[in-house]
Amino acid sequence: MVTKKDIINGLYELGLKSGDTVVVHSSLSSFGQVKGDADTVIDAILEVVGSEGTLVVPTFTYGQGVFDPQESPSLTGAITQTLRKRPNAIRSLHPSHSVAAIGRLAEVITENVENFCPFGRGSSLFKLLQVNGKVLLLGTTHITNSIIHVAEEIVSVVYLERNREVQFKNPHGTVVRKWIRMPGCSKGFDAVQEILEERDAIKETQIGDCNAMLMTARSVVDAAVEVLKLNPEGLLCEHPDCESCAQARAMISATEAEMQEKEIIELAEEEERTRRFVEKSLEGNPVKYFDPDEEYYSPN
Image (cartoon, rainbow, N blue to C red; front, side):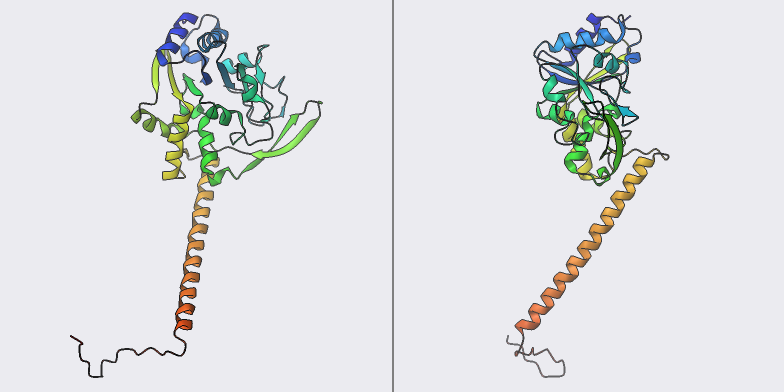
């Protein structure tokens, strides 16, 4: 049986401390049996970060149905659903990728994000990066590490140019429809693990049966940006039935072909400009070409 004290000790071992702002991706079942269930995990984290810290969890709905911030359940696990229902939790109004937060920066993290891309500048997780936040994975891998989507936005990968329609209730109770950017698939995000390990950027420990990992948001984003700059397909998954990644690869290939065609056209235009310049420069000054039949004397 995992207790609150066990979780607190594990968090201290990872290096989580008072005043930290941390986003938590979690699997309650990964702990085994927890005394007090999800509330115990939340209470333990809040005790460690203290009154000056902030706990953030994803309460994503992925644009399914009409988003109501008061009623729409979180689809990202029991711990996130439990936290969002707490009286002191603030939930953002983003129609597909809302978060809930408790603590000193809760309002800053959640306010005015509904008009921005899910993970672009102005989004909750972009703000978490800006305040030097941390990422805590409890029983999950980087497949759930949503801060990596921020790196995709920073690099401006072409496959982000996809949209979907969502519905949400505004503060007046009216259902509104809008088109928003659709993030890419996250099943290939474990590609950042090796880089983070090489840089000693991850701390790991075991809490009950749960493998827990802590890292800074900056280290994760830096690693993901590096992957994408080396290969724009670097964070896509290899699942043969993943339509999202298949479409993303097609968009990347089309963009690369377009860029190659543009380079060829630009090169041809440059060659034409050079030819015209040479012709103009030689007007009235015919060039005397070497004639092999003429007797030639070397100046040496």
